[in-house]
Length: 214
Image 1 (cartoon, rainbow, N blue to C red):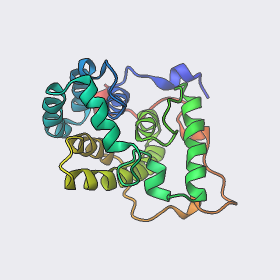
Image 2: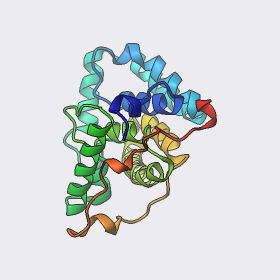
Image 3: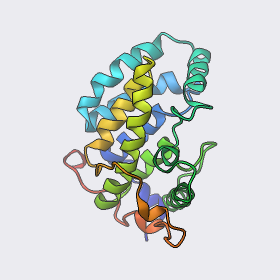
Image 4: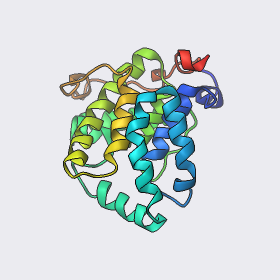
């Protein structure tokens, strides 16, 4: 295993796109509006079809004050079981499987040198950061869990006509380009005898090479 600074490799477009998508889904601090154009550009460079989803969201953000953005984010994603951004919750519910998934995500974040935030390790933003650095097979598996959670959240946001639905739709397109579709809960995580994958989840040589990385 190489050093965590080597694993991060944020210079790759694939990694930058996932980090940018994670930023789009973080609590909107004072830097949010200033960072928005660059994040959208990074995502669109790897997933051009996501640009159409993010354009209306950008217009909405520009028409709001920072305080309004913070309030709307809190009302949308906090204290909600259907709109929560924790991937493990939507995939496993409150089962042993989620606990194992949290352990795996915490270990992955530690391995690549990314600090945990105030959010839980299975927050979609953290999952996106790991996906940007995982190998093809591992990214396909974790991506399947992520897209399942994203589709559930996006369906609720669409029904409520929330401006955040564009961000979730863009995330689905970015991750869905390589994710393995998942319909049911992965039983491998549901048995106490099954140990969750740990740091081996991540490739020593960084994310897979893509056309956009060359």
